Length: 449
Image (cartoon, rainbow, N blue to C red):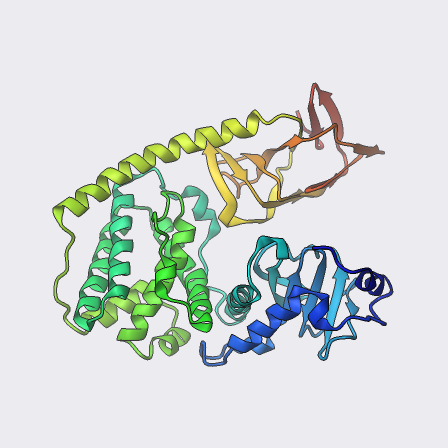
């Protein structure tokens, strides 16, 4: 949707004489209105959503609400009844639905392009989620999973996957149960299956799940409660794919929280006092009630095992195909090759990464890398990284490729500085050189071979 000429002119003039009211200016105002409608200090002990600074990118402008010290280039938007600031384009810190620092202040960030089709009410609930992350970062910085483990998770192991699928179904049945004793027995079985499954995977993988459940699972829980959504929306119809462990942690964490709401009224205050995995809190609540026994049938367990084996094979094939599609894209390709110093990850979207080979990772939405020579950012393009060490990403990146570029990209070279400025791909490095090999442009950093 195109912005009116009046609004564009007001932006260019610093918005000091904006002619439009806030309801006409951007979907951002509708989202904040929905946010305020469902926000409540009772959502979580100590969490005050109305006090959290908000940043919203609407596809053309970035808006700031309730921010104590807006940095340049934000300008006051005087048509609003409260303090609101705006800038043209997408602020560099607002690259995803997340919590981020703007002007050295933790801020809840939201992408709200109207063309995506999400309603202001739905986006207001997502903004509650991101605001809770701001609260978590301030009060509970240990409530998170180590993203290093995401790239090492044993997705290729069929036995833990089968148990994971049964655990998810047990959690679903616990929430669907009308009677408390039925809920209790399915919750108990989910815990038993988790204990068995965690015995088959590395400790780091189990810790990653538990940390992500505290971080994303609880933020998802707060969002769901604020929006008045049904628990049934948590579970995708086809289940979670073999490598969707991060996505699944949103659901498992929220499921543990909803079970705790029914079994342990003081669990939120208890968690505020002492950080514990949500499954451990639920196990305590279950064991205090001596639950009856629930069990899956032999046929259900066999089906889970057979599906897990098939899904592991499907995952391996999908990885090969994703890599092949990337490498066979038509058009130009830019490859940045690190030299003596690897490129280090500065930011990435953990929901949009895929391991596709030994030390190779496809990033399908957002990635920032850098070293002492400069930095690069890929946004809404696909990039393939090759590891510099044992870890696919966190020991540094030796090489990154971005392909599918229509037309020969313009590369600026001056006194050893190389600048790439494309739609969705920006890079600037000192001590670099450029080679052209057919339709591939290779940017070699200092010491590259």
